[in-house]
Length: 155
Image (spheres, rainbow, N blue to C red):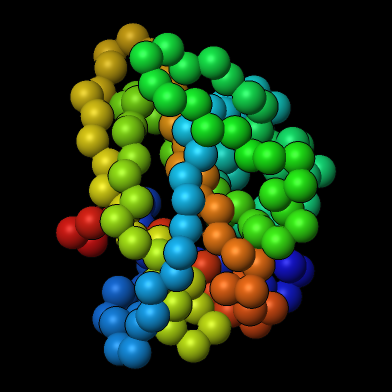
């Protein structure tokens, strides 16, 4: 994981053109997890409002996220043995909007993965949030020298 580059093609103006991934993409099977919150000790880097990356072990995952009970929603937790064959791609976005994320697709082009997602939410004037997007993929979809990008719909 140390050699892998991460690129956020969404949010905060950091990015690369989506067209860099457009040619020859293959769809990658994925699943999402909605029953976690980011630990209070995890903060964005100075001057940033997001954090993203890949967890390939339970220890990495547990250092960032904690299970949460969600009312009126079917909960989906990461199984204890999930990281044997899978990895979790994560996106954390701090701010005054409690975003609800929807993954449209995960695509692979050569060694690069692109998570294409949409979001919706209403800003709050009195609260601060850290909504997260957790996407599980098979480890075989990851490449040691590839990029992982999160691309917001319409960007």
